[in-house]
Amino acid sequence: MRAHLIVGSDETRFALPIGPVRAVVRIERFTRMPAAPAHLLGLMALRGAIAPAYCLARMLDADAPMRGAGAMAVAIESADGPLALVVDAVEGVEEIDESDIRALGPRAPIEGARVGAAIARRAEGAAPIIDVEGIAEFECPRDAAQRLRSGDRS
Image (cartoon, rainbow, N blue to C red; front, side, top):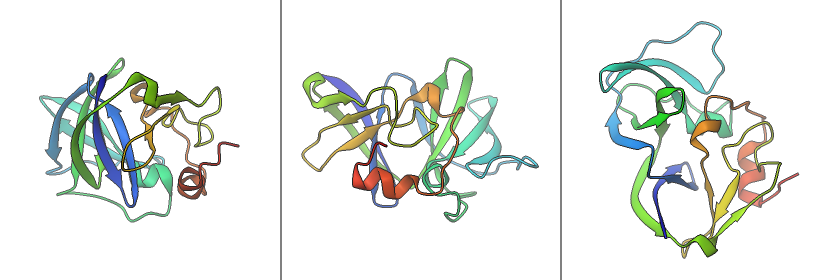
């Protein structure tokens, strides 16, 4: 069994391995970065460090409404340092059995990203498992959300 934090963006639920999670926080303020990708909200103070804040909704749909001050974020310690993943909901911690996790192979369900490199089977339905190290490398295709919901991995 592996513990995962279940987070949501719109109607989609994701499983985030609990190991690198440091806290769930509300964004008080952040600084936008000129010419940044749509899913990079900007920089914020996070547990005594400056960290990039990535928006899960905008990773799925570059045209999704911008989240901002007051939004919920998961503080994560990645190999490159701290980062924040802005989410719409945090549902809690769930133990997921190894036999219920299926790798998706070299192509993730969201092209150009490792965000959904595996799927966890849950009683409430399948949840893509977020690859923490893939968050900063993410490139957002326009139809990611639809492909994720339909299970299309092409």
